[in-house]
Image 1 (tube, one colour):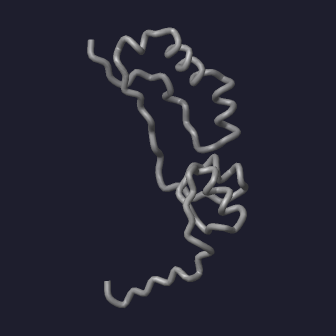
Image 2 (tube, rainbow, N blue to C red):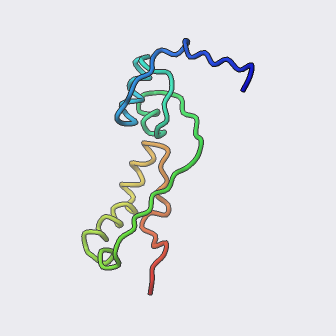
Image 3 (tube, rainbow, N blue to C red):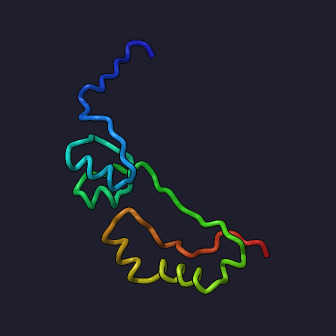
Length: 106
């Protein structure tokens, strides 16, 4: 593009964070200006958050795993009131579809 001058001199620094929490901590300590990350990390450090979309996570696993007790315990834990209470304290998570079988071959 002609006529566009990008000036990054106003940025505090360019640094590398190895987690979203580490990035949020660097911003809170004024060692960085901006980073991609989860709302929960921003809230934890008292930072503003600008959402740019939602990301969903699916687990792909063999049918035999789905019926194992330990896996069902995990699903039940994700559906539990205590887990939902935790996500209310750390906003940005939606567990409403947790444990839902999306597709399965009969």
